[in-house]
Image (cartoon, one colour):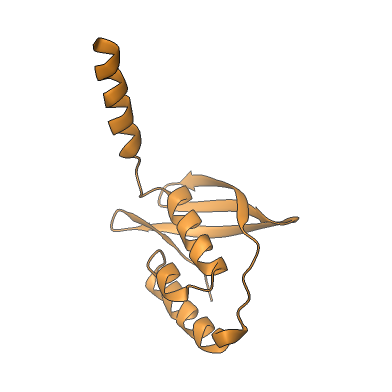
Length: 110
């Protein structure tokens, strides 16, 4: 009986995993971006980055082809900034995030 209750609490706690981590936000942003879902990606971005995505969507139109999926996503946090590193195929890339009003958002400078 005690084992069953403990297992229940472990299940509940694991389902409450925070969705406000740099890893989670970067993963969602990159997934939407690779699928050409610019509007959805902008939900995980700062206002400035969202504006850049709107311009990219206008130019991309139907020409957007699906990209390879990102892998090996890791983030390093320093205060209210994070730098996440990931791979797409054989290439290593990074993405920056900032914490605004307690929420992590992707932020790319122009």
